Amino acid sequence: MSKRVIAYGAAGLVTLMALVAVYVDHRREPVWLENPPQLGQGPILVGISPGLKEHEGDILMAIAQVNDEAHCTVFSLTTESNAKVVLKWLDTEACGTTRAKPLDVKKHVEGMWDCKNGRAEVQFADLADPQLRYPIIVHALGHVAGLAHDFSGPSVMRDPPPPMGQPAPGLTPQDAGALKGRWCP
Ligand SMILES: [Zn+2]
Image 1: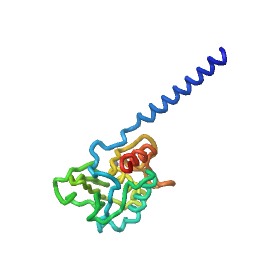
Image 2: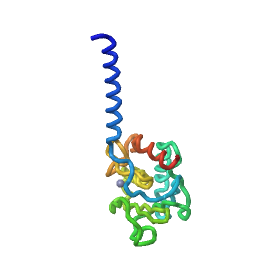
Image 3: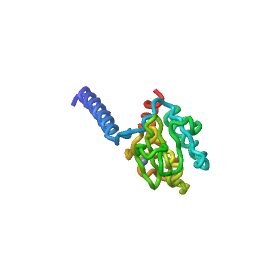
Image 4: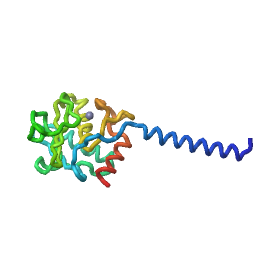
C-alpha cells in the first residue's frame, strides 16, 4: 500500500470517528421539558416564601451553582412579590388557585406548577435528608429553567437526583450550555 493510500485511509477514519462522536452526542435524552413553565426572558427571578427561609442558604448556593455552570445569570434572587418563580413548602393550592397547571409533580419530593401569568411555583414536600436536600433544590431549579430528566451521564437532572458527593452533583455540559443559550442569549 502506498503512503498516499494510508494517509487518505487515516483521514477517512478520523472523519468517520468525528461523525460517530457527533451522532452519539445527539442521541442523548432531550434536554428540554415538553411543557416548560412560560417565564419569558431571563434572568429567572426567584423568590423564597417565608416558610422556606430556613433553607435559604442551600437555595442561594444552588442558584450560584447553576449560574456558574451556565456561565451566565440564569437565576436571580428577589422578593417573593417580584418573583417569577416562588419556592415554598407543599400546600394544597399552587399559585393561589386550584386551576394551576401541574408540571413534573412528584408529590413526595417536589412539584412545579405553571401559574399561567408568566409565573410558576415550586413546592417542596421533603428537604429533611441532608444528602438529598441540595440535589433536590438544584434539580428543581433545572426544571424551572426548562430542563427535562437527563440520564446521558452523571447529572443532577437524573431522576431521582444523585445524593451529595464531592463535587456536588451538577448539570451535564450539554444542559449547562442549553441554559446559557435559552436564558442568556
Ligand atoms: Zn424531576
